[in-house]
Length: 131
Length: 210
Image 1 (cartoon, rainbow over the protein chains, first blue to last red):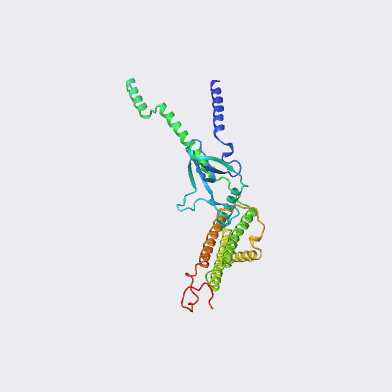
Image 2: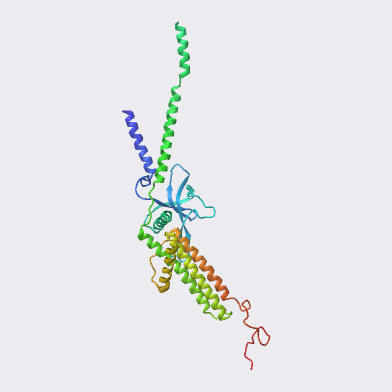
């Protein structure tokens, strides 16, 4: 009897704890693609797939994109989306960000301009890979 | 066998195979922890590898492609327009030389635009003659209906591949234009003199003399 009560109490406490810590929508194998915007304290923003382990001092971003100033370029918008990896140091497709440097994390909608630009990039990647 | 002999044998056998109960518990816990960690890491890796990736459909691709085409054409038209405006000024250099500089700049800009359209064609899988035909058809279409005279479309945030092409096109068009403008607006002293002055003076008189 006592054992059963302890198990139930443990389950409830565990549920409360994990419910407070984890985003159910962030669980794997569930729902559509999840692209997050990570806004840093210095004003920079990165978009990509987020691994946010609550027990780590860093968050991990993969498949990373960021906005670039395009005021001198003849695009419709004064910003351009750039895929991270083409810089001089050609970083691999993973970024570890210190949690204390993060201002906000938002999930972006796939129909947003950023979401559509990323989806187009994938389609172009597939088109050129298929050739 | 005497009893004392049996005790010794058993004791010896016990010492050889005895594993403390605590050690067994620790080993079991370690095995469970290792298996659990492996499962977590494995599931994480599988989930990450199989995470859904959305790709644009044909309509979205067409929208982006059209926006990139317009942006390239806009870069060309703005650059060509700037060259034409500077050429229309009263320049220090001779008219023939100014025409030559302006025409060369426009030709370079057209070549640049053609290259940008070719690159755009390659980005969505065309190559060779198909890419060239695509570029030529776009040039014809935009010559007939310039972008600057068309209504402003819905703004599109370009995909990075398209953005890279447009960005490069804009940078090079600006560089070509700046070069042409610098040549067109060069002071007369730097420009080649058409012929020496009959009076032998390099500077013309401010008022005509009779």
